[in-house]
Length: 41
Length: 479
Picture 1: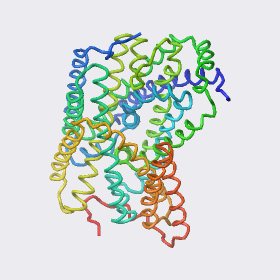
Picture 2: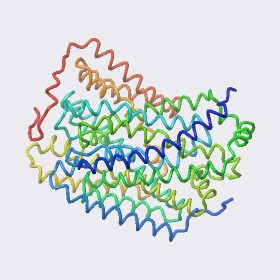
Picture 3: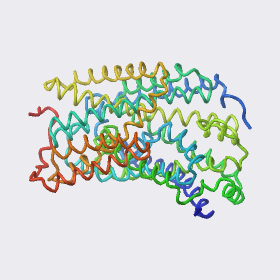
Picture 4: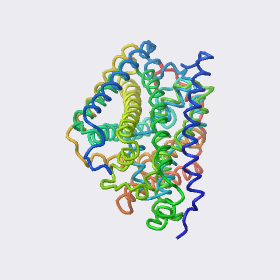
């Protein structure tokens, strides 16, 4: 049986949490930019 | 270890339901003031920016299944199970260029049905509407049922009450605010979902000494890290094609393609894909290490709540409750609005009342939303367990619609005979695969059959479709 190496598992977990945080921040930044340019709707 | 039957006190559950239910209704009323025309009510004025556009696409795709089922995937299929679930985001990535093309080809379109009718004619349109309505209803019913079941499991709120409250709240704010209310609440719901996922995931990571936990799990349950787990690999492709079929055909996504501003529609769907991609791994990785965390999963359906409750106590249970309530709300409101649009625009107007004015149509649209909510409530009320499996049967149907949509958008040679044959043969053979080989093959088989049929009909076609025929003004009637 070929197993996923430990570093891949750790990288996956850290990357997923990091991307989720980055996604939330990006959404907020986009909202502020849309608000500034009056283009939310 | 938690041995109690629910992870949250029922009174706290009711308080949370009341707070968030009132919040969504109030926001629906607030944003609903903008919906002064039919276009405003159905498509939020076709001018939604990138922030709200990305958030609504992401939040709609995060269902209660994403939060509740993903930990089970991790528990049973390990790493590949989580990666398989993540592939559902590929539908959003691939829909990004399609959404841009949709806005260019059909600038005045309202629904996915409009495209099929103008591109392939009435027979294909009727068939497509049947598939789309069957799938949307199955999804809507399964979400409402899941809402009742999950709230009961988490907090002990009786199924009928939980299901009714969620449905009622979504019907009210969709009714008063249309797509403005749906998209506005989706933004707040998506932020809560992302925040909740990060809090639970980070706490889990801090509690797991991941090096030794990996060694221990690899020794006791090596299958969870098996890089070549055949069933998980099959489920990966099946999930991916199911995601393609769902996103490409369903009016939930088409209505957003029409609603988001043309200049940012492609970027909005791409960003939504990136927002969705990491969620299954972030939500489900802790389940792989459940044994290492000393959590005894007695009921696999409660894997997520048990882990959140164990790691964060009652705070974890509250976070999970709110995240699930948000994920349910963001999916149910979108399904209500998009399915009502399909019934209003394609069935009520185009089939039976072509001369009806926009103001009256908007009034009927509201009646259809109420009717849809009522029908869903009546179907869900008896809590028939086998209704949930209906959604799985929808896999082959949506898989069979992928190629007629893609070829119809990009290939002049694609024609109605190919589209109809692809949808019928793909659905039939996909259903056979479901019963003969298992759920994890159904969408895959349906998509491949649909693809081969579409390509064959396109190669031998003498049709050269005129794209300008898709540019129909809303008041025009179709021959």
